[in-house]
Image 1 (cartoon, helix red, strand yellow):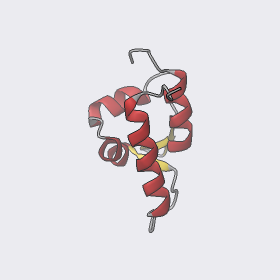
Image 2 (tube, helix red, strand yellow):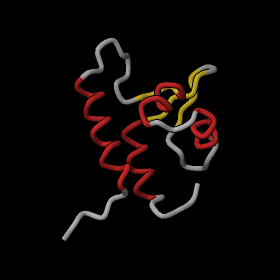
Image 3 (cartoon, one colour):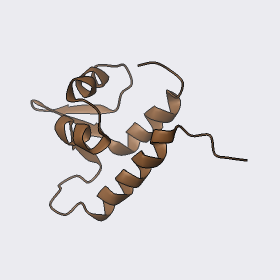
Image 4 (spheres, helix red, strand yellow):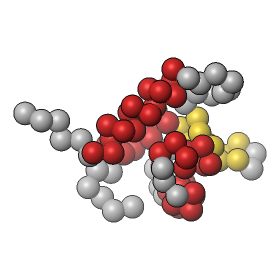
Length: 85
């Protein structure tokens, strides 16, 4: 039986694995700024800011910067499969 994950899920996991292997110079390998997250996952920056405002979205604000927690983002995606956000 085929795995029934959303098609983007496979690209997302590949991208995260690439980041883990190539995170030289990053302080936190599993934290993305909004801009980094937008570029990495090919999601518009305004959409990322809207996601950051959603209840339960894995975001933390340190000073004036928002960071998305990549590991928790995977869990959030799986909990919200099939929902329109």
